[in-house]
Amino acid sequence: MNIRFSYMYRDAGNFKNWCEIVFSNPRNMPLKNLSVMVKLALLDEMYFDAFAVGVPDLFFDDYEEDLDHDWHEFERLEQVDSPPTDRQERTIETFILKLTEKKLK
Image (cartoon, rainbow, N blue to C red; front, side, top):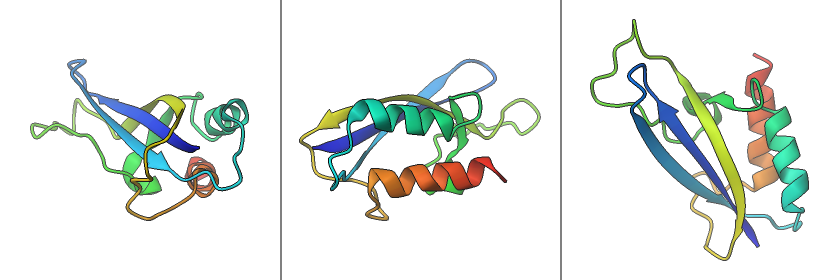
């Protein structure tokens, strides 16, 4: 089964945008293990820079640099039958490696 990665952006006014990306899971890694790996790869088990890891950013058109920020929030992982939608055709494990790499910078 493939893995759906759900995330959101919350601006300074608490307005939110959401997105979901489906990654392939060719080694059939258990969802529980993947969830732990994702949380460990994020700042405070939640935050990441969408641009840095190669997923669409969810900023609003009226982005105010003084008030808003670059951080996106991880929502959840789910197993799905849907086909992969990641534009870079990465596996979930490759994506988690990218999250980890960008957390350390």
